[in-house]
Length: 287
Image (cartoon, rainbow, N blue to C red; front, side):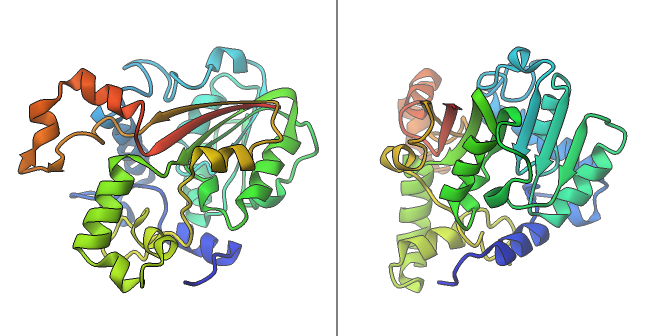
């Protein structure tokens, strides 16, 4: 397994921006505005209806936007700008860092006339701001891809003001997406684990965030247990976690042609399962 470094991580995400291609959508031939609309449409689709209300800001069920009015905020891994766009509507100053040159180009275009949004391409392992600068830090699905994740979490804590808060979405080692879709179907039935000589980390990297058929998968994609979170985030004064995932994670199992979960379980029962065993940790931290 090739060692993940900031150089190959940057190269991967510059070549494979977080745009979720698929179907008839080709981001390489799309306008920036089409890309922004495509990504936000996915977030507000049926898969994400439990993240926010239909007319509410994205992730409103996890981020208290009213508490951020007039504050200084940072997003780590701004992608194509869907979250920093929401933050900029309430914050006095919205800073963003992201290693991907494609993300920087797209989001710089998006926010070219937004005075309170400032974007850079530095590392989250050395956030270019002084101690105690931010009231709030957000990072959605990013730091588990870092070469040194512990450094990143320590940097988040360093740049927060005393009493400041952070919100993170991190991959979870659990739920049907991890155990059924990846480990069993792709790992055992399709031979992925055999090809990687049962090196689980190498195999998981190969099938995580591999959106195009010729995509190799992200250089590193950690999936955390609760014990991992306690170890990595133990210096924060307060840690709150919730389990969730795409709302459809428990749908159509074991397969679309044999959707036993849909036949046997109500929508409410599948939503209950989603809150107890699914792909994401939603983490709120206080310094």
